[in-house]
Image (cartoon, rainbow, N blue to C red; front, side, top):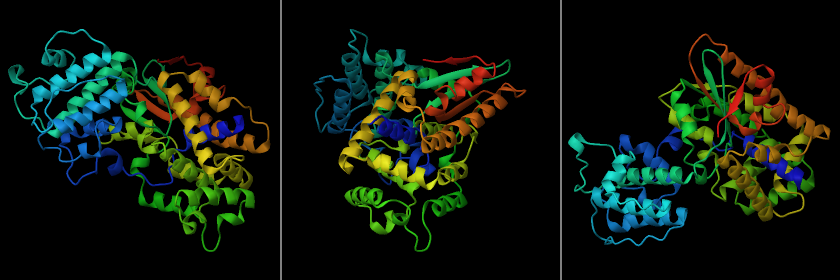
Length: 446
């Protein structure tokens, strides 16, 4: 069981390369309806959607007036998230003003944080920067509230409650500096659910202070030739199929799983074992609404897009080549691991999800030690485990640490915000320890 959990967790932390191609448009915009939010509201609306506020019907007709029944869906989301019981007095069919929305959210905030605040709703919102001031303090409280305005206010109220309760995600976060500049080191989990947000203000402030974002691979800006290269590497050509490269035992379990999720045989038979491992893992996690679309890397790449340069420390081609370089024995071992050797596909999925959720909980609390315990509890014993560690950890950790040192040695005051899989930061040969061995002081930010 320990070996199985270790394999699952390693793949989850490192599998930034999703089998499906993720585009910048899919991440940075909401395409639930033909209409999109106004440019000033896009990011807050996207995060409200990420937080799970409202229902799918909430994310349409952004400039329409809000009625009580639509706001009720938002209220229910707050009740479920923060364990409160709020009795709204709004009429379901009544068109709501900005003031009524703010009043409703103010009452929700007070219940959620157990506050005895007796100020007016607008004063509370203004004092806590939950509303932007207009000329001479005119907040337009009597104006009819639009859907997108309501979502922006709701997102800000949600953030305020989370930060007040100390429920923001602390992450695996360090900083290392020299005389000229600082490199912030954020160990990421490449897949997530909406519980990972909002992130701590320390993390967001460090990002805001940085002049560049550094990632393993910029998956939001993959070139057509990179996508074509990946497809060629992931799939067998001609008459070749996966059953010719793995045992019947592994293949039967693979077929059982793929059939259970409705993937056609003509597709899954052409996938190479290493890509099949990632495919199975992503499908298992998707059943629990955990995906790469909500991963920390993608969040910051979307935030940096058009604002900061995004620097690749490896690139997608490097990573695909690395996975493809795994020996045939290692590839089958990984695939069998995610399928589980003694359980059916449904139980295997539950096991995968439980491991990932445990990792997310440790990440949210900033408990790097416990996360390291999941990833590195078992020392590599056989040749396959040693091959896995060398290619996935050792070689890449060394290269990443060298890149950080190069950034620190620059004759400039540029600060860098670096995000790589959390496993690369941890353990005795992770980036943090390699930098310390090189003479740098590395401080964990919690």
